[in-house]
Amino acid sequence: MPVTLVSILKGRTSAEKRALMEAVQGAIVRSLALPEHDRNLRLHEHEQDEWLLPPGAGERYTLVEIALFEGRTPETKGALFANIVEVLEGVGVPRTDVFIRIVDQPRENFGIRGGQRADLVLLGYEVKV
Image (cartoon, rainbow, N blue to C red; front, side, top):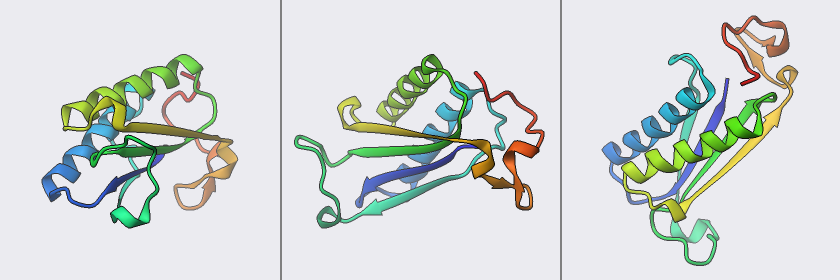
């Protein structure tokens, strides 16, 4: 179960924000072969004076941080990166304004389905893809 945080600068409409979240979530589901219902994604908006961006970053700069169960291959992660950049470009974010960070964590670091350790839960999908 990925836990995703998308950070952007303030100034987008509700429709734009929803499209951005749906695009990122769709790329995650497709790239990691997850069920559609496996979603936990937040969007956080920052004022210009609350974020020191890299030089050259535009007003649509988007940071995507994903905490994952460990076990995905480098190739799967690369496909995820490419898919996220592609879908974000489709909602108006230039490829050069996308930064993606994956945090791999052992399954026992997640409490799911009523507080159970995730390594003890049958997920219904394969993590090692």
